[in-house]
Image (cartoon, rainbow, N blue to C red):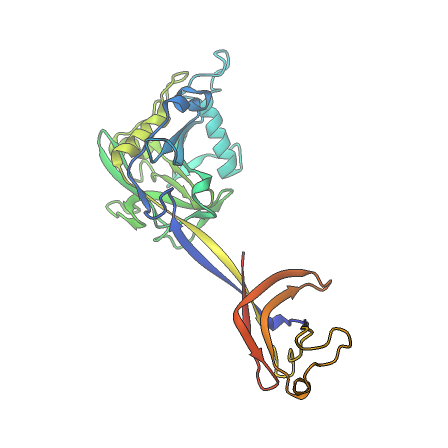
Length: 331
């Protein structure tokens, strides 16, 4: 075994973006069947959200839908004596903290402030790092028709950020292509259709826009179970198209190991030297040795082995040969 100290120019770092299917069946970026559990809907969690599956056996959880309202409307009060405190109010406050990071801030969709919203939260097991901007197509249906939604990541010149990371507007269109019937893909009166938040795998949908465009409206009456999460789930079921991909940045550290002509030509292997005397077994190996490199080990300064790279086949080495071995570490 021989050691060689690596220099700064022996290291190169590279980052590549990998796109993959998001849903349980990752071979396709689209799901068109959506199922909910009546048991979950009737449980305590059903007051807050509905889980949505892509199979009737309810084994493939894809996303969850919830509804938030700043005044607590659309859901039953926790305590009839305390107005405004209900599951919808709790959801609104949780997402205001998560996304805006300010309990006094408002949700402003395309320049229009909304006091309530739906949330589509992708199941954490469906992706590794984030959603892929520009891959979204979501069809939602109301009594006034069907609207295809996408994000405007392909047309914005400056990306906006908040506490949840990148923020893109939900607009009319598909697969990142914006329908420019209206200037920005949405109405100036009702604002955009919401936000696409790829870094937390979340879509926030603005009811002001869906109400005017496709007549999809949540119940906002105080102390009333409006069953609002189900209203959006039903609209997605009728649309029969939810297309989305995931995205992951793979960082690779390339380490270049360069055995020079004068290096790594001798071995401590028992086939090369005598274990008792340390003498070279064959005189021809003294001046014309031949070794075979099979493994590269990476050590730190305290001689601790950190990584091992195996060559696909032994690499012959002698005084007439130099080699360049590239070790790739993905993390």
